[in-house]
Image (cartoon, rainbow, N blue to C red; front, side, top):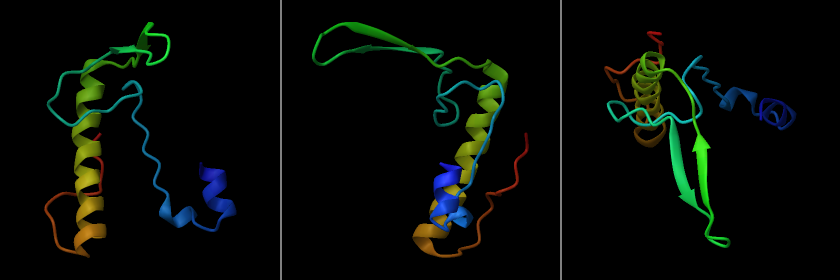
Length: 92
């Protein structure tokens, strides 16, 4: 993704967030940490399990930080540069 954005001259539009030990699925804050999910394949009707991983403490901190940054992004891009109490600075 980073290389693609650089080739297109849009690297300034990309923000990469990294949260070590959080797994692959960051839900909204204060929701349970799901380490796995069950799905049913539409065609074969076979049940599939997806393992998301992650440690609970790191995961909950990442939920709060990512949510705060998402709200700042949405406020800035949907409403202009309105002042907000949320911060882009990570507290992790």
